[in-house]
Length: 253
Image 1 (spheres, one colour):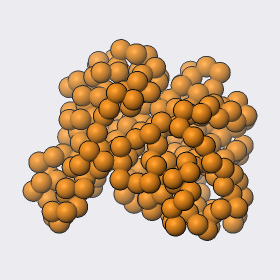
Image 2 (cartoon, rainbow, N blue to C red):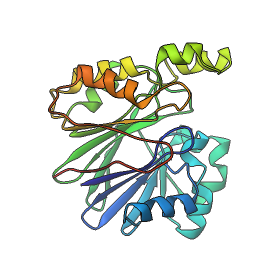
Image 3 (cartoon, helix red, strand yellow):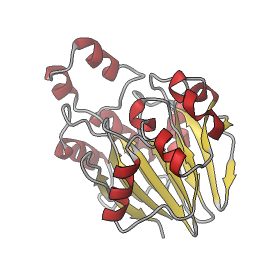
């Protein structure tokens, strides 16, 4: 199973997962042009693409969808709450609705969604497995509850939000209401909270970590990395995403 982070952060999100001859795209918050450019940078393509799964309706997760689907019509999987959002109204002809916890078989893959605490209609993370490997995607949520912990256990690869350094956020340029939103239980996960989560699941088969959705104004890569590295076994690699370029690519073998 190959996982390719094509975009991560407030400027857009897109993750491509491949296994055998099939592929699934998770979120599409960047333009088709940028998507193709970033794929080409990595010598990758969209061959075998079966579907698009949407975690929630915020623009940085869906902004590229409408034009993409005109060129490449595919089923789009999302929760009922996400589909009910006016932001998804132009995509109804591609609609496939799923429920959290429901296994979705898709040509060699199985996808299950689980609810995340975030300020969207019905936001979810994903567990993705093929016949051999399992990964988890959880990139927009403000707090860690028992369900999130339980669902993330057993993933070999975890792509996880490490959005902000709390001190940088509090002292930064954002207006106070936005700071409150980010810091809330349904906002975005801080570096220390991400690190604590990782420390609790690292002994359940975890082999690779990707720190995602890093804020450009309220975080620095070295801070996110240091917080996680301090709590995670040194044998487990920790990778960073960057809003301006694609990557990393993680192969589970």
